[in-house]
Image (cartoon, rainbow, N blue to C red):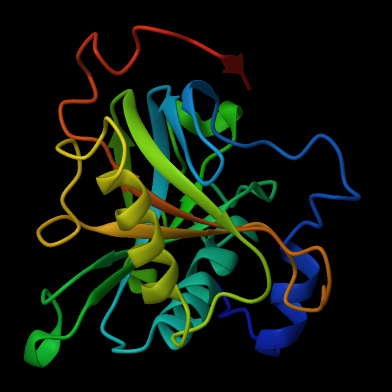
Length: 219
């Protein structure tokens, strides 16, 4: 029987979150930049597979920590293949307003699967309550912000992205009122300066030609 992996939360987060400013070769989902302004960009992401951890927490910070705890056990070998899976970036927490208990937000912590496991991810142990999500190629509007992503600032950052989009040609392409947005985190919690976070929101109809009509940069 698989033994439950037990680690202090701060320890496994620090060991597993990469420092993107210092570590090279960490896999991330591939994308092209199709639109760029001073305070946001629109990216076209390729089709990708993610492992998702739904949580019942009503706090973004608690949901991210506890959801990632389960993901960490999965990548350390708590799967039916006993496979060790390399860490990737970003760790994504998707937020669906009014979909949780008592009309709170619902949270899904998502881990991008390395290319090696994109086609056939190892099945997680059932008790982890994880599931694989296959995302089609689609466009995402992105705003970057620094510091720590907290319950106290993520809504403000999402609102700033919404305001920027409302003043641009993408004003009718997104809807924060109905759709989920996500917070992407790239750094260890022990990194105090130079932190990178992003707000993501899907662009409506992003599989169409309008979104991908011009490519500025490829990543």
